[in-house]
Image 1 (cartoon, one colour):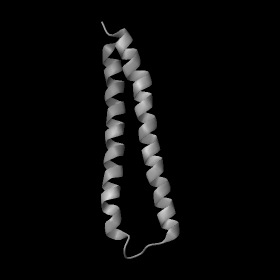
Image 2: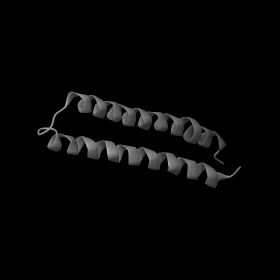
Image 3: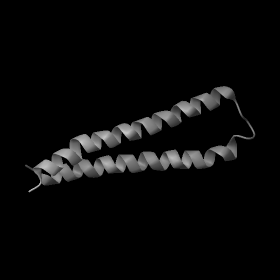
Length: 78
């Protein structure tokens, strides 16, 4: 049993969630500034796909973190 390995995976998962959340928030904040001058339906749909993919990947990473890092860590903590 190596507790440092569990902590490294937990920190990695948290870092991925933080980075994904940061880029999603920055994109949502900057999006209204640039869309008034060149609104295109195809770009709008593509941006929504990227946004939903980012949110989906963040949620998946959160559940992976819970299932593989937090739950086993609780049962193996001494």
